Length: 85
Image (cartoon, rainbow, N blue to C red; front, side, top):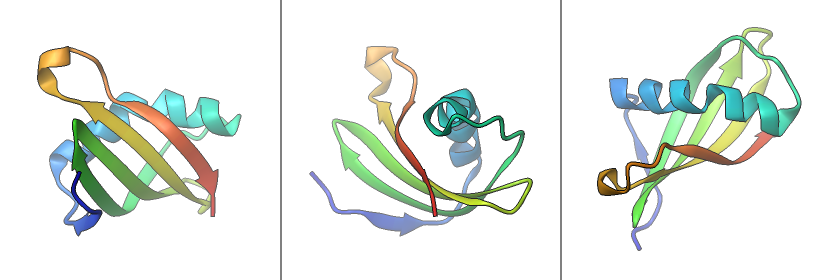
């Protein structure tokens, strides 16, 4: 298992966040429309763990943890934790 590394925000990070948008709102009991990525960290495991810091349309910041399984599993990324900062 690798350590956490801060990475530059790329298109794939926006794609992952789009996949888990509903899951973030479910974890928080909210209905945020937009999430702007402030920072991304990742950790390569048997898939990829992501830790996003995002900002909502009303300027609230959220830490979102996401697990993206390896492609051969055909499983989508999913939220493992989401908390307001």
